[in-house]
Length: 185
Image (tube, rainbow, N blue to C red; front, side, top):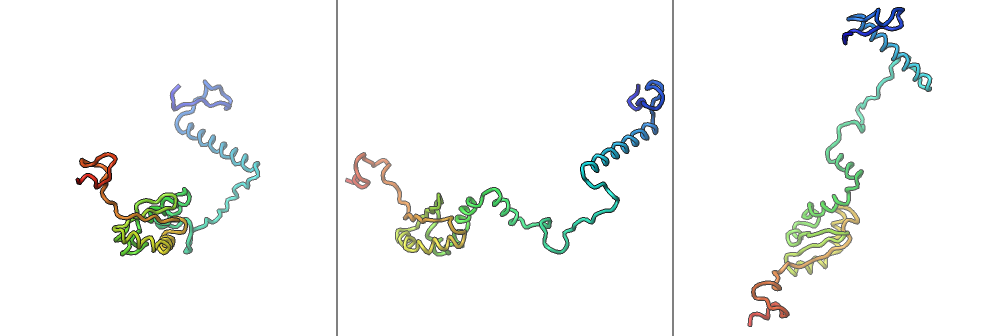
């Protein structure tokens, strides 16, 4: 039997007597599809669903007002994603470093730079010991500025370090057990 021909059963003849070809095959497939659709519609109506009456319901369109289906700004979408995934704390920490000059002011940012932020403690390195002392005196004002700029609770404590001096502990002129300037003899 060829792949385009299928036997017709239930038509009074045997399968070997009657074979569908061409347009007869298409009519039989259409009839089978109509019967399947009718059976499906009957099954849905028995489940308590309202059968299709032919009247169309009007779709709800967006209109002139704001709607969640309207195009959104990229920043707003990123904000929603960050809130859904719990990234707010990490982004706030990064914002302290990224907006340091805008948060504390140009003069302070010129002489102090943030080094690390862990568990609410911001470590800042000053350019001189005088600036380190000044930053310690301005600690409350700096914490208020940071809270205003990035939000409350991001930075709880401020730790100020002076300038990093070169280490005299290691090198060609180091003697174990002696101080850093004891080797000048």
